[in-house]
Length: 226
Image (tube, rainbow, N blue to C red; front, side):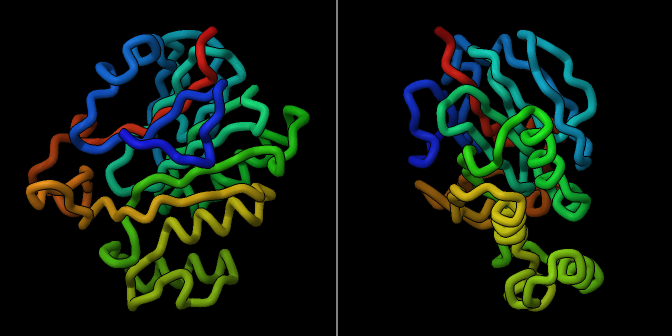
């Protein structure tokens, strides 16, 4: 598990896991009590208030309660961990291409504002995801993102049919008012580590051999328990 320097704060616990990390072992005080969401590639963001809470079908969670670990499972989609700069609220978003196109980032920005906050007071860190080096999609999907965002085609897809979803998500965060955004450049489909082993699970790379729900990596964030 690795952390983002942008989210280093004495009141925040966070990390982006790899395929080899056991979160229950790394975070024993938090993992068993974590709220649960059931990811559906949508735009609903749940507000978690209780340990072991079932937040239902959602692709994002926000909390202002210390000790509640928000956990996002991904295997090519974009994980985004967020925290208010004062450490009083944290959130986690699961952003696949469907969620990105449907506007989950804007939905989160709206939720922040509805709660009396300002996205400019938040820090966002984008974790490992499938990048344009490997993430092949249809030309129709590239067209749809270019039409929705207005971004140049070479930004949406630097190579023919190779979607740069992390770059799109970073742009969406900036457009939604999040001024402090960092991004991890690792591609979940091709990044290799020691012994030439793949560092991350990948839905696309391992589609024929993976075990659903099990072959994922976790991205987590919490307000530190007192």
